[in-house]
Image 1 (tube, rainbow, N blue to C red):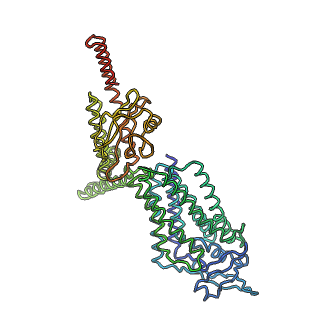
Image 2: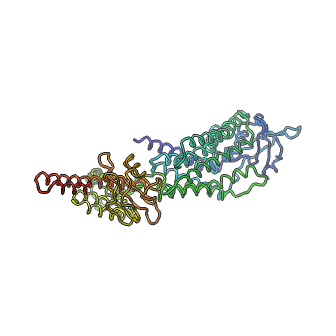
Image 3: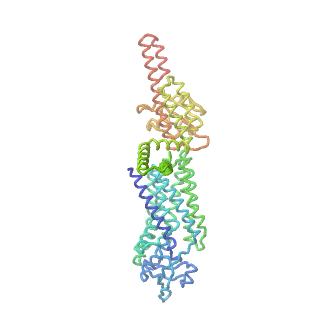
Length: 577
């Protein structure tokens, strides 16, 4: 089995299991509601006291003495600044505080204070992010899709809140540490998503950005994961960091990602920029919510817009999903959803068995005959499963992806019939007319190599193309080097910048180029369509080469037989080359 599918199965199973645990634990989960900041490795100072906590006896300025509390009390307090509820609702713990010269043990009842409406809203956020993560993880085929899928699953588990109150003490401690780690490492994973999507950025800039992200994320990982876990276990942090420094680094991490993506976007042009546009702007809007959250940590009077904050965060995976479906910025295998195929097959098989069982019961046959009929039906279904699978897959592909299916059929027909075309001009006319019609492009043109240039031999729908292009035009240099396709927006070429050129390659040599215009709607070509067009160009190139070779052979035969003189043969050969 593919290692990627195994990894996807493991990540998905773990994320789903953790979410099930959280949902069942929500009624039993609670947290220490007031805000506290460290003033030493083993003590915290209350900076903002919740109204209920004030009624319980807490005041601003109280110092929480963690080593003198029980572990359940420390656990509820230690993860106070992380999006997690690890206290057990209904437990009464003793919070030991120092107030002036007094040391007080204040009883504190842990309670689930969130409303069901808030719980459902947070669960909806988790499920939305989870669906996007599973979709990209299972259907993706490139690095960007893999990292985005893992990032989404981590966010779904950790945010907006994680609930572990239904577990044992050690389970709650592990849940708190896991949530804190997922929360604090997520900016680095988000940067890797952006890095995988970004273009036009040098390798040096990438390494600098990675270094800056590491510097920004590691202190937060230490404070919110390692220190919090150590405080929950024994009451004292491992390494002391200034809270203002930690908050500044968290903000800086977001700014590094924004700056990196902005530089990449500004350096991207043409089709590549079109494809990344939705993700870029949805990413910028999504960062507003994160920056608002960070602002609230620093502000004396925080802006309470938590609902808006989480809605903006949802925009980034939503923008990615839109790009996947429309512009294919992340290479996702969306030719057909296999889940739907097997769902239909399972329904058919189960339906057939139910129908057979009902018929046999209606006519009241004996048990032996009934069992024989069911075995025969099962064998028949088993033997015909592959054929049935192909038919269902084809039917669904025609229904759900009709335009793509029709384009594939049209291009395949062109390729098959090209082998029986005997005239170059006829094949060129048909190619430049049928390829853009099948794919929905504005037009197409075909260039063939001559001695010192590439000559335009046919075009439909694309105006102002030069009749001849220099042999070392940058677009053709790249086509010779790659024998693939070139987005003309990425190069300086006499062909302009509003098209894509596909190599007409034969036996490792560039014979010419098929130039395809954009779609009128501005929709970019998906990776699957690019592959299909690349294959079509290769087949057309092979047929053009075969026709030219036959024409040269016929010309040579005519010279050898004396049907034409050498001067006429040279003139015809010049026109063929």
